[in-house]
Image (cartoon, rainbow, N blue to C red; front, side, top):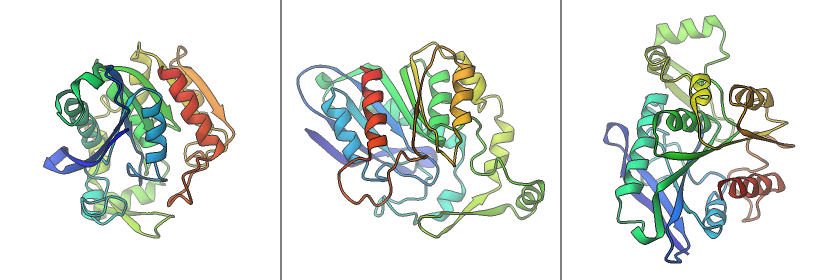
Length: 281
């Protein structure tokens, strides 16, 4: 297996996005899967290399990356060291980042040309990354298949359920904080996140995007998901009746944790990976 870790791909505002490539060389052109992580996430969360290897062994080129403004750094790709960058992140930046990764996989010499089918690009997105992949699939014809894991249905993470008083304080102070329950950090959110949404409401309309899709779509959601309730997955299915919908008795991260205790995937995550591979093949 060929594994290339932490390749440099330039994203929004010229920031480097560390990017990984996994593939099993066999002299055949394989579809390329690009994975987009969620809010407070990163490409290696929960020992995601284990997942990447399984997709590679199943006959895909698997690519995962850190969004340019997710708060991690080149030196510490699993820690939120750059909170200023985190505060300046938004959906528009992440859509641009994903476009630049798609551009990169079609042009790079890091993936052997005889091993990759650049005309078959598939997206997988988790949580907020799921919403981003839905939007990107709707606006980029290069995307041929889509899988979402516990996807959001609005571009309002994490402020969508905040009371009016908190939103007003955010507007006045131009800065709000969101607790990271895993690290204990108070993650800063600049008001530009809200303004970006208001300025780009049409582009950031996940309902409109998924309704417009005419490619194969698989929606996977946990029945015990507290971060993005199962009703969100059912709503996506309602908006796009041709999509396949899979419910799994699990939480928002499919039983995983970070750091992972070992290389064994939880049973729920095994179901997610197997169902995704079966669908994409």
